[in-house]
Length: 310
Image (cartoon, rainbow, N blue to C red; front, top):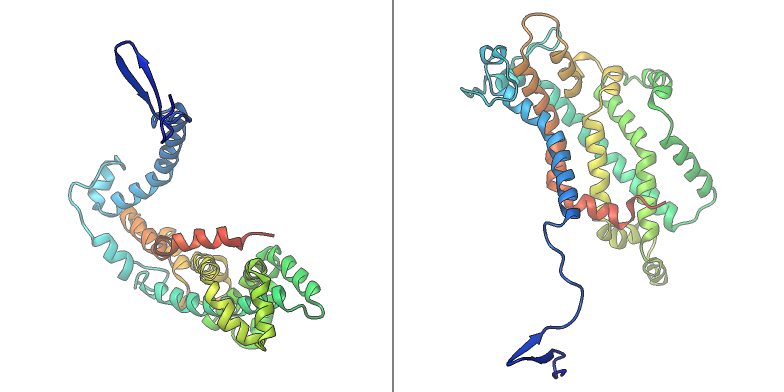
């Protein structure tokens, strides 16, 4: 018999047996598929976390304990002296002031490069997506081609240009280089994002008499936080981790953190201090990690919202 709420009931011998609504049987949590999926994820996570574990443990040990061996063992006596030395005392060439100088150089390079490139690229993407001007297709094609040109091909011409401008070997010159090389891919991201927004918003604003900048600041920008976060993460991590441009376009006093890390790790003088090298490596990679952890959710939202649609 079927009751009013859809429950099936039936008599079975002397008792009454009641069954619930029909449907697919719930899956077991420990099904074979889940075991394979979670097992694979755990193995991959351990594969990537194991080097980080070794780096942290080694950076907290003294050199006598490191010489004993067993890199996977936790430190018997924790010491932060390698971290202090990596930050303030390690020698990078003729200077022995650690990574602190390179850190502030990287900050002075990354902040203006990120702000300028994102600001210009967002306007470019907005214009290409919503304002069809003469030559827009040619301009967009040039940007696409520029996004895939290897950096090494452009180094010598840019060295000549920066030398003629009088900014070669300075932080200003390196900011210009990062801004230029970040422009094509960022413009592509913003153009695709703005093209995916409802066109009716743009047309309604035009009917109300809004102009180029009014639409950009009052309509497009408030709706574009995810794509700005995506662009910020890409630029910050790319610029902060850059090594090639830092070596080529600056002098030793303006070397970014990655170049100084290379000088510390590859130093051939004195005793090889593995604990200092590990601490210096973690300090250099800390900023991109913090950026990812803080804004990771917005990064996923920006990607899902159309940042990589063609």
